[in-house]
Length: 242
Image (spheres, rainbow, N blue to C red):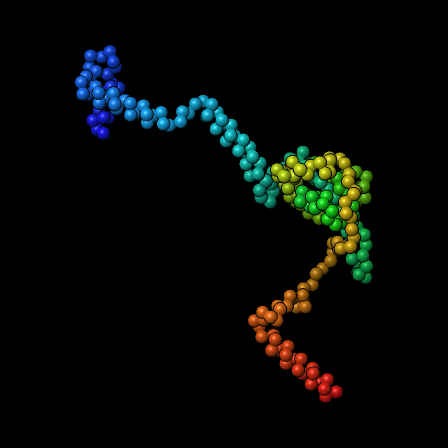
């Protein structure tokens, strides 16, 4: 191998017209070395300007798809006034001191998954839905919305919740399949509206031991079967004595 390398180097430094070009066995060895180098060189793919341009364009497109998603992270993501957002008019209730319910209508943002569920027939408390821009929604001015929304109030934490909901509309699936469901400045009222499960905004849930889910006795590991058996025998005895 050393001899082949030396012969190849000799050919590289001495052109064919040079009187120093090796002859005889050295020339044959040099010719063989050049042939082997040509075969090894031709075995690699040729990288042309077309290949480089294609690779650069592909990496640029990947960067375009990645950068917007990176900016969408965090509690205060970057947003634009032109971002698409759907607002819903929810029929909710407030419970007063006498445990009576009073109607209240609230304007809330609807994420992409929520609207798709409504489109597929899911029960909802939203009577109307409209689409607008994030810049208009964040002004929290009902006069900028359709007439159906102007007598309602905006939900708590509306700014934060609306920005979060707008992020769901930036994904590929909603952009390609859901934007037509509620056009901008349009109103839809044909969803499966229902008050069967009432949304009580000021409802306080008090958790007690009665809310615990009891384990089935067939897989009991706490010895409750024995305790329940003793209690049952006691109740039978009491009834018998009566």
